[in-house]
Length: 153
Image (cartoon, rainbow, N blue to C red):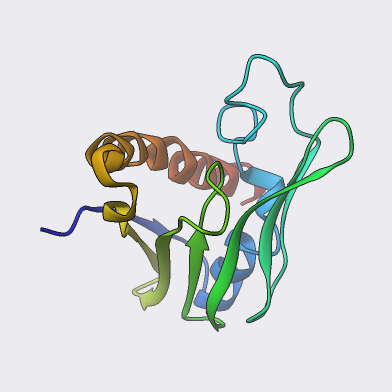
């Protein structure tokens, strides 16, 4: 059995703009206060920023309060404006990764964003708990993206 999380969101942007908002402008909308390495730790000060480095050699990087970087993911597929995939490891390091696959499909007067996060089995006994945490965790992320669109539209 494959453990996965699936989320979808329709946005009133064409695929190119939706793709760029999700990637290049991630720092404008990602909820760092709750969804970050430092946001999940009582011992760390809040994160300064997050950035998505584009392209097939790209990464998602959180800049911590002390100025150091924490890499969350490496890009494994970059097909702008239709899709990107990540080897995802915000708290575990690059030796234990799950997969995040995000696709952008034109639909009527906008774009449908489909996110699939899978590969939790690599975590063994923790797999189901992590899958459940991400299942609820991706909701506020996608919600923040949708809310950001209402502000900038």
